[in-house]
Length: 174
Image (cartoon, rainbow, N blue to C red; front, top):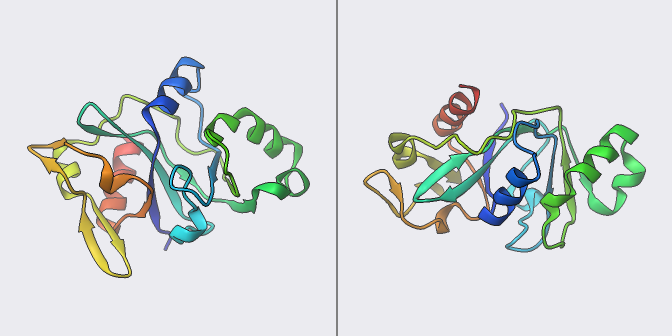
């Protein structure tokens, strides 16, 4: 069974994507790297077949931006050699996701869900959203009265517990 992960996108990136007309386009590519600002999917344990949910922390809410299935994970410096012309065109179209550089990984997938900026995670789901790791499970910290007071515990790439993954899938599908 595939795993599901969230990854936090910055508000600056989301504002740029919205301004430049990316809203409504299907997610097909993501970038990762060795730095905190561009975390590594491989280090997080992501593999082919897994699902990635980009999220945004904005105005005391968590926003589910979409979902992408991981089809291939490639080293960034070999993308031109290992991809079709169509996939390489996607790399060029979505290169804005590389914000700040430091890219070492490229995730390619079949067209995922459309990118949306109007899908807030409901307060009850936010309060129960659970991540799992080798050390156990944890809920998102700094959630009070259905609001996200700080985004520290969602910064990075984190694997969702199965129940939370199912809830995120339903939210994005629905």
